[in-house]
Image (tube, rainbow, N blue to C red; front, side):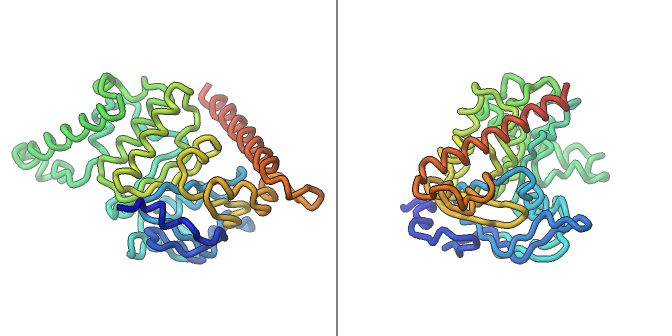
Length: 306
């Protein structure tokens, strides 16, 4: 059986290019904050069953677009569909139940709850959340056992089982990233959206996270992630979408998109005096700029925590 990523072979690498089997389709979505337009995406399609990277300079609108399509923010205008269903202005809880879940750049683990309890929170269909049902233990006990068993399986998979009964607040930054990804899988999503999964992660856990992201795709899920780590982008992405100043300025396979003049312009400024013939050199310059921005963001992040 052919891999879903083979469907992307031969596509015209241009902004808004139609995909053979898109799971997420965005049309004319704008988000304005006063006089600032943070997002202005005319058309974007995300192919089902592949790993798509969303990259761009700081302030390009990547996380804002994430917030919009996952229901954490409302657009000024525009619409989008997920798996053929209109999701415009659907709140975050309903978006998650539809099968689209996300993680955050700054992890959202509940630090005064155990790792296991954090996992349990991510599960669907919990009868104990109903006030009347909660009073009758037999109505929710069996479901709670099922949820706990699933949580334990995922903790083993993400190598967090030895921390099962520890408070989430005691975990390292990388372990919290793993916990958030594992918790997202508790709801059996169709599409997982990861916002800078490598931010603040030490090198020892980086390879583990890379493997987990690839495993999601191999299991049939769609992955869309925001990332500054160009090693990760080039290593695991099937397709790359580039944003700048709120717009999609380029799309294409990872090996070619870095040499796109629009991408070079977005990261390095006007390039009319640059020799565009040396694609490899230009790609390296873009990558260096991305890695510099990632380092600055990480230092700022650690500064806020200290």
